[in-house]
Length: 154
Image (tube, rainbow, N blue to C red):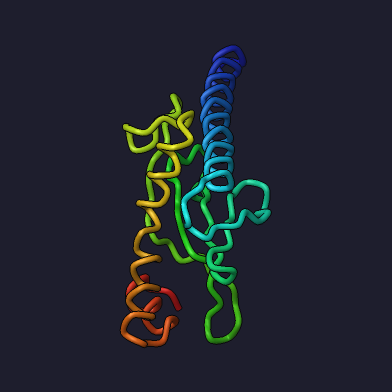
């Protein structure tokens, strides 16, 4: 391969990845703004993540994390719960996932520029968490036990 070909391919890879990362950054911004300014009673509080994820504390207890999958040029958005296992080790438990493209479309139908649509989509993705918590409290069952059973948490 010639240096010129390598340079051309390198620039292509860089540009595609940068475009995707710009859309991911816009999605994170829209989600944070929408969740923190919403008048909905969803009991979310933004908390700082590792720099590339969005974290919310839900009901002053549960840490919900939204992140891109751990791979180069990942288009997979993971929605999950941070939980400690029985040994106290912190783990990410995926609740749901979606995709983002270079045009800012989430699952091919939601624009990352629409804060209301981003929030509605996000809440749909973490719906199982709310359902599990509701079921545990409604049936007087241990929350952790149901989370482990329903979400596969450890």
